[in-house]
Length: 321
Image 1: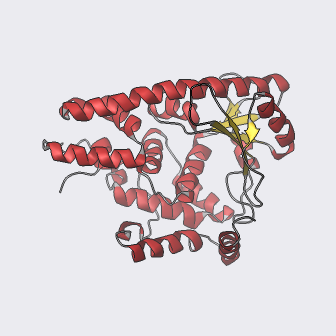
Image 2 (image 1 turned 90 degrees about the vertical axis):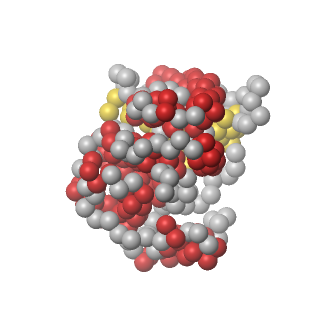
């Protein structure tokens, strides 16, 4: 059996195939998840890219270079916003974005960014909205009840797609967990010596990335790559993670997500053993019925509390609320 993309990226014991058909199929898989830049960066860092066909290398390099140009734009726009917050004395935490690519993948172009996500304290939201509007961003749509962010768009010259800024005051829907966003703020630290621009602790970054992957039901390889990259780069305290998740009523979400990741890349057990894996229906999504079963399991049965499951069911039945 030919190796999966995750094995190609992270298992150095896997021998790379020589069949060009395999690499065309791999490119198709990479295209679906828009993971060209991550694949190019990681394989180049591991010295494996040169062992692949020239057409495969060229395609990845082209996409990687386009991500660099795009991320330069995103970084410039992010820095403009952050400077405004710093000057006005308002605390802010950039989430993911170009900083995540630079710190945890090793290069600005190593991971594509689709928007600018910023964490704001609820009490500062009105001032935050004023700042992004003063920089030319317009509200995309009215706030949806129970959601935890507001979106603002700006059309950029020469770009067919507007740039989106999301102002978050939380990382989970209201009433679906017992989580306090203050815990993230308390352990945050100054970013590059700033007084008001903060960064998440490594621990809370990993927690957030796991919840982010869960929220998208791990539907793309990019969520796997983000989580695996952090497992390899950071020393995460899984005991604390499970204790906190139990307290926050997010344990099923965290365990489900990491169980799927470890099942897809078993060599992670040699890096850091995850103490509580559970079976999921993720691998069985090969028919319409099984996809539906997995969707139901993910949507309504990955909550620790029956009350939270019922609230999510209500949100699903009444999406405008």
